[in-house]
Length: 134
Image 1 (cartoon, one colour):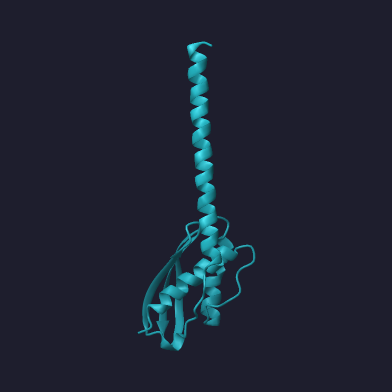
Image 2 (cartoon, rainbow, N blue to C red):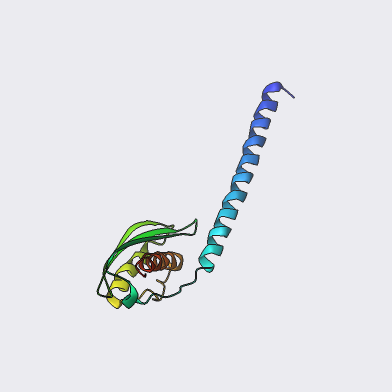
């Protein structure tokens, strides 16, 4: 076999090995993120115990991330901003922010088709609000 062919075959073999390693790592990343999504537990927040103020909270599963800013006054969420939302196709879940403000509860049904993002956004809100409880 000619030297040029050996070099080309070696390069192809190296690329194939690197591709396989990358695919395995990506698969593990997705599995870990999915496990974190399934493990989310909502503890509930009594808004009457949250002091007036502005609170930020975030939550990260690896595959989905959300950061929010909540403004609380007199036991009510006056404003809720989604500062950051890294997701795949979970964009439709962003309407849950308005639903939380309108209904004044975090424990709402997930948005169909965007369950993971819904859960992560709600958990970020819960984290933010818990910062206001002394």
